[in-house]
Length: 210
Image (cartoon, rainbow, N blue to C red; front, side, top):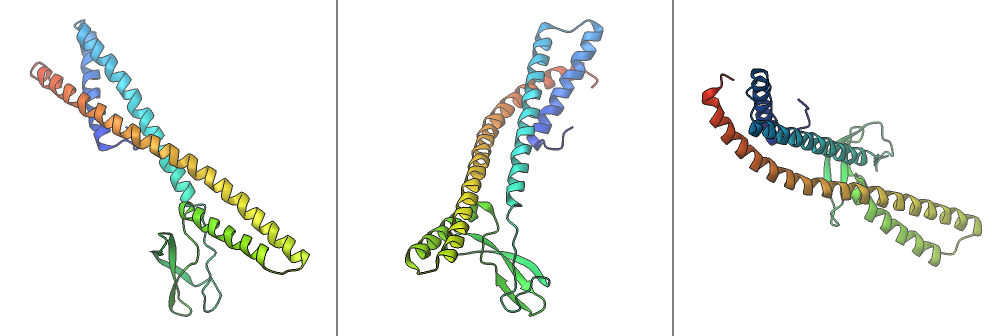
């Protein structure tokens, strides 16, 4: 059985397996009724839906985990300026609600919170704020043309990265919302079908040795 099924889905699959085996035996005995054949067909359709939804859920979860992993801290100790003795100790949330990694420098025996978010969802407003600061500096600070050109290039590169991040996050969030909506629908369907199958199983069990 697939490992990405929920406990509820596993229970329904077990019930479906019971009816499938019974249907196979009845077919061999030439005693398969139209009612049981229709039940088997409904069970097969539901099985396909369960596995298709489980696969979709797993894909969404994997995409979410992949997105979480794209933000890699280049943290450095604010005291010694090095990163080789850093150990992540926790996650801190700032006043804006952004989550950032908190580190301990074993060389200097100090703890500090890195100044960037640790996930792409919080990185979006962080980059938006950075762009606002860059635009303000470009407009209000006197600088030579070469420096201004480099600053503008950095600003444009950040804007492109932000747009790409927005697109990726919007797609992932839309898929997760669709998955959650399907979860609700699937759970309702499974609840009703499980009740029906349990009743049918109880009816059949006195006449079955399985």
